[in-house]
Image 1 (cartoon, rainbow, N blue to C red):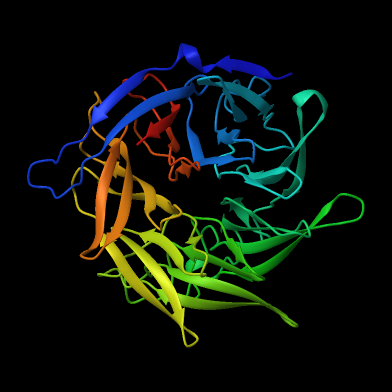
Image 2 (cartoon, rainbow, N blue to C red):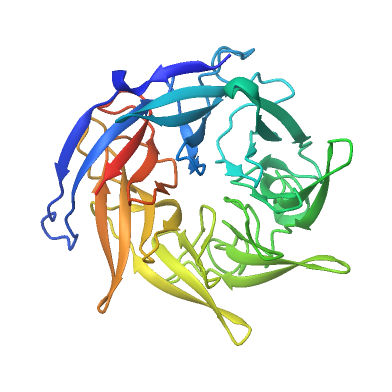
Length: 404
C-alpha cells in the first residue's frame, strides 16, 4: 500500500533577497525558496535526494514507518513526483526493523534497470519497481559487524554487471587503533544466479597510513573506486589519529589494491573529509575536508590537492558533506551556519562556489531548517533541491526547492 501526501498542505512560499552581510564578502542572490514536501512525523532525512529520467525524486528518512515493530522509528523511502505546479509525495517503502533493517540514512542510487539501492544501519537493500506503481524490497546483505564490516555508509556505487560497492564505518580489523569498534572496510556485493549476493571485502582499513572511518560512499570511475576516510593517514597529525585520506582502489589479478592519493595534515589542506567524492568529466575529484573545499587532479601519474576555498565563520558556515557540480563547473553543497533566520540557534545553508579570474567566490543560498542532510540535487534548469531537518519555522523536516 502506497501512502500519499499532498505537498500543498505543507507548502510555504518565501521570497528571499540575500544581501551582503556587514563585513562579509558574500555575493547576493534573488531567489524563491519553497517547501515541497513535509516528511511524515518528527523525522530526519539524510543522504540527500536522487532523481530518475522523468524528474521524480527519491530519498530516505530515518523515522515515519507505519510497519515498524518499534512504533515509527524504522524509517521510510519516499518518492516525489511533479504534479502540475506542485509535487506529490508517496511513501514507497516502510522499513520493519526486522530482516530489512532500519534507519535508511545514506542516500540512494539507481542502476540502469531503474532499481534503487541503499543502506540501512545494518543492511544493503534494493527497491525494484513493480506493477501498479508499487516497489518490492530485497535485502541483499546483512552485516555482522565483524570482518565483513558494520555500519554501511553511502551512497553506494553500482556497475553495469550489477555489482554493488560501498564502505562501512565499523568492523573489519579490531587490532591497534581499531581495537574498540573496528576501522571499517570497502566491500563489493556480487549477484549470484539464484538472486542472492556474495560479499567480498576489497580493503580492510588498518588505522594507519591507509586511513580509517570512511564517512562517505565510493565513486566508480572506469574499473577503479575512489573514496575518503575521516581518520588515519599521517598519524603525527590530528592528535595522533590522523586527519584522513583520499584513496583509490584498483582491481588486479591478485585482488584489489589501495593507493592513498592525499593524506590530510589538518593544516591549510583541510582535515577529516566528510561525504562522498564527486568527479568531473575529466576525472578530477572534488570534496570537502573540515573548513576547505578541494580538488584532486592527476598529472604525470601523481595526484595533487588544490584548495579551492577556505570557509569562514560567517553566513555560509562550514561544509556539512560532499559537493555536486553543475554543467558550468560551479560547486554546490550544504553547510552549517550560525546565522539563522529562525527561532533556533543554527541553520543549514546551501552554498555555491563559482570560479572567476580572481579565484573561487562563495555565495549563500539561504534556507530554513537545522541539521543539513549533507548534499543537494540540481535539476537541468538549475533548481536546487535538498532536505532541511527540523525543528524550524517551517515545522518539522522538509524537502525544499530553491529557484534562482
